[in-house]
Image (cartoon, rainbow, N blue to C red; front, side, top):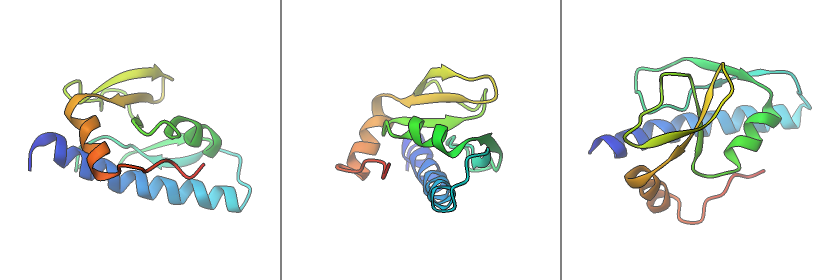
Length: 111
C-alpha cells in the first residue's frame, strides 16, 4: 500500500467519525463548536479541531476538501485552499484525488 493509499484510509476513518459527530449535532440542534478529528493522513494523529457543525458541513460538502491542523497538510497529495488560523482546509490533488474517486465513485456528503 503506497503513501497516498494509506493516507486515504486514515482520512476515511476520521471523515466517518466526523460525519457522525455532525449528524448527531444536527439531530440535537447543537450550534456551538464541537471537537472534530483532524482529517490528516497521519495514523498517529489523534488531535481535534473545534468548529461549529454547520461550518464543518459546509467545508466537506466539497468531496475533495478535508479539515486539518496547520502543519498537518501533505503537499505531495493536497493543497491548502483556506487558512482559518486554527485549522486549514486542504483539497486532495493528483493520486489522492483519484483514490477518492476510485473508493467512492458517486459518494457525496449527506448535507
